[in-house]
Amino acid sequence: MTRDHYGARQFAVHLGLARWQMRVGREHGMLPEPDLEGERWSVALAAECRGQGEHVIARFGDDPPIGSARAATRLAARMGLDVDRRDVEVLAARGDLNVVSSFRGYPVYLLHDLDRLDLAAVREVVAARKGPLTDTVDAGGAAMILACPRKTFSRIAAERSLATDRLGRYSLADVHTLAADKDLTSQITEEKREIGLNRTRRSETRTEDIMRGWMLRCSAYLDRETDQPPDLAPLSRAIRRLQFIRSEIAKQHRTPS
Image 1: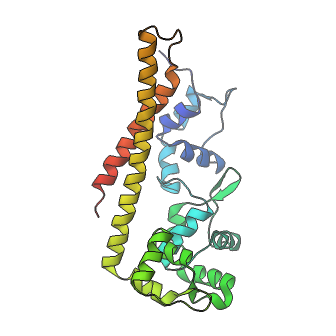
Image 2 (image 1 turned 45 degrees about the horizontal axis):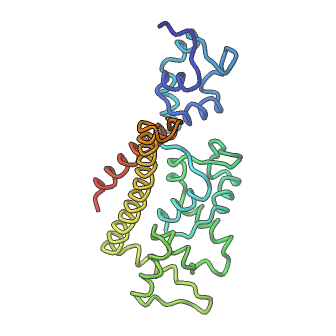
């Protein structure tokens, strides 16, 4: 069958792009807008764009942009500061960080832009927000710096008899000492891997239950216990979901501790 146009998904595949890359590429004028009605690109225009996908990937990378909350979490772990989502927005307002696009009305940022941020700039913004509290962090901030669940940090703090001030805050220097402990960080990484694996396994079980329920309804229809056959759509979604989940479990098993 000869193709006479490309829809949005087909055009992204033609260019070797993920949907988010194509969307951002269009927003930044690197890719053309559709030249046919119904959000479609003609074959001729698609041919002219061959190779443009490589330029989009070179500029925006392979990792989808993230919002302010996740950006703050990434910066906190990398820089040893309890970065807040508001700090990320201030950095963007100051021009230190580029807003690459938006998602559901909220700004999003590229990982490589976040990773290139200057520590001094981030420290200045965090210090301006925290004022006299600059050298201390609460349990949530400490957990962000250590890249672990808050519950995990609370346990570590109790095990290490970590001191707090009269506001219940921890010394930033003490948290940095914990972050420099390779044995502790390895333990945290392994705990996070196990938590993630258990969460994914629970999702696997729920999805398997959906498929088993569909099979029971199918058997009931085969045995003439019901006149209505089961809808195929939930099964199709569950199969795709199970494939994704089992792929994630395999990757989590391969992740070194």
